[in-house]
Image (cartoon, rainbow, N blue to C red; front, top):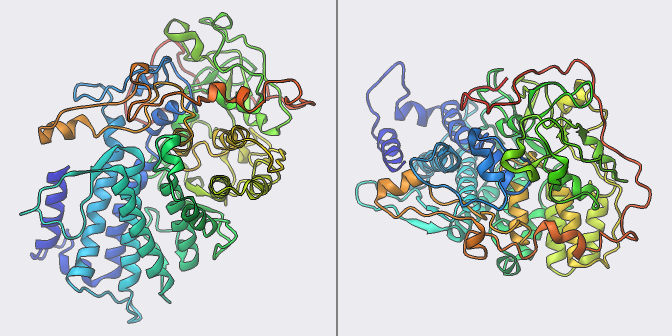
Length: 584
């Protein structure tokens, strides 16, 4: 990685030979369109990492999906008791650790090129109308770098903090802890907001698919939302959570997407797919919601490859078990009775007794009867009409509510939740879910119908927030908002990793000791969840297990059938092969 970054800097700085096939430094500097394309390359590196298929593994740590499959190391990340992360160069799925690290660091290198050229070397950029758009380019570069620093700080315990002043000839790179990465991220995001706010020509048009662009007001809303997510995501434990500057987080979120101080009516930050072969698409959503074995119709004939974990169903029906009963699981049947709830969003999931790829000999407690119809797309998210969703106003609402809670405004937190998807609100997407468009689900943007007064306990607020992150935010924010939320409230089950180690391949190159996180024997140590407030015990703490607090009129159940045109076949007895290939 270091060599790649150094070569990138050196190559971009020293290009001087005219080449009709490769842009020279002068051609890029003198052409705003070329600069935007180069910036788009940086955003491609970062955003594809943010929706990587290996994000499924991280969601499994957060009990969003379940699996007993060895492909992509899924079983390693779902097994209970939790396994310690295998961070070695000989591990068969090193990509789980490397994808996010490489994508973000590559994006930092791209951003630094622009920041160096403008800030240190005085480059100016004008558009075809003769307008000076130097600050417009610089704002996008700071956003790219700030987002990359932040993503590294959210995902890893430490990382490189390389800026525009780094000299590959004289400076030695070193790791800094995640807190410093996040501080640098917020500083860059503030600079991006300031530059965009002061420009009369600003357009954010450097995302991978150039068909989408955003004006200065929309851009500021997007950046503010990310700043809130990144600041809140700094905490790995409840103790760290209590030390966060929640007032500043609240200030950012209120200026974010759909917030009361937002500058635009933008409700979702997303980018259209590119091509139909996965050139740029939401791998995270696709790999979370496809079929391999059988079909979903007639009922019980198939199940998803990475089914919905029992946690999501338990959050909709607190009487539903937190571990699948082993006596209800066998090689050919998942026999647990359906859940029921007065929350209509249970209809997002289809009930089946077919275990699909789940193998009871590997752990019957990991079974599931549910598959998310909401995110089903005929096992193919690649078509151009679909979008890669990075941030929704729904998540921004949850950040506002959480910040209000943490600053002592429980009445405000309750009101925000009541107006969100938890109560009467709906998720804004800007396009139809594929499953909705194809007729597999009637409505993929339902309201939960819950009401809070502000007199609830911390556990009851945590329950309400976790329900929304588990059900509503799943794959609608990249990797992995549920994980970030759960770790800062100690909601991860005992032994779950709360952050990733620097990839072993990087440590080996540097001659550093390889380390890792996770495992019940390490519970409570840095990087490993104590399980002190595990979601598996939250219903009791929140008073949700007594009959008085259970939904009194459970009238919604998951559908047991979908249209007969869902026909995806395969073998339910073997792990899927072909790592990195399109699965369908």
